[in-house]
Length: 468
Image (cartoon, rainbow, N blue to C red; front, side, top):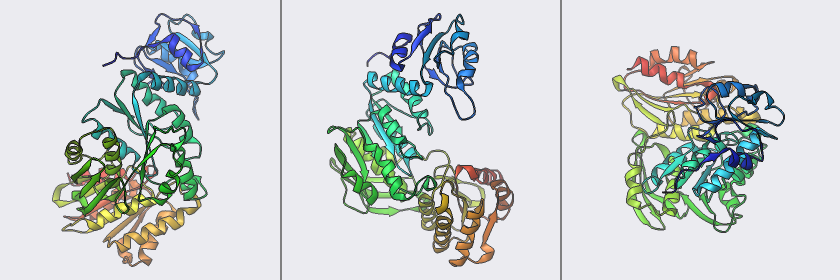
């Protein structure tokens, strides 16, 4: 095992294109932070300018909190001379952090797997890291630290020189994935799908696909793209990839393919998985076809890195969903909640409704659906489609939460056949949580899904308290 990388002041300043204007008492940093509230003694503080605050204004506070060094814009470090901390001045602190992360990534010798897509990024990241962990030392970016600041902070963990880093790349505007690709320079890229998330920022789903296709930029002939064979928007663009394409899917021929799929609703999924290295039987507690696709993408990565198929199968059988991402919560009196409240888009919500439809239950099937945000002018029609899907899936009770689009969702469900008394509307999740828990019955199966801004997790919390 190679020794851990040292973040010396000289190396850091050179990587950032900065200049040391005060040497300080220590010439080495134990890590990097951008937040004085969580900064640990010995770390380098980078003063990032945000929408509301300029982090450089908190540099003195960072030194008081134990920072061994600070990074500030040129000409602004004079007040910190004599503070005992190393002071590095740069042209732009965000660009400097990105440059440091890129240099660390190159010097670490770690292989990088980068994952993007409209849905399933975080789950695919977690599963991929779990599968690779059967053979390698692996790190992953924490939570959803997947933007132009979060990704560099995650890559700074490569100072420990793990074998493989698995990172997700998020975006809601064109050009953002390009920036992240230049920083991460991954050997393996994973493109899960193209959907209608963030459609409010783009003219069309095709435009979203073009922005996601930036994941292919900077590839060499040795690069690998793991691509969804079931998504025509992905496959059409993957043909341009400079390296090798490894496909995964269910409905179309693919290098890694699930066959003889058995949907078990809230009890998960079973399938026979075929890969270039052989076949194995998959049985996983993760629910729905979306998660099956995520597992196949992760399997393709693991097979590329020669993880044995029996190890993949064993780990798939013990997977657990990330918090609020399809977690099946079994409560008192037979009430079961599918907690998918972390986030939502129309495609993912329809998939969740399908899980509700396929799941056996002694009680009613109840869907609590929060308004889906960032859909722009497409929002009204897309919410109506989800309402229609809920009615056609045989949902017994529908609760819509949010603004006018949530009203439209409930109305569309009624128009599609859901009896009017079974469609309910609340403006906020607080209101929904207060009223809804009182009429949940013994044995009910409840799906809770919604965008983070609507906070449908409050409904889950209330149900847990009521049926503890």
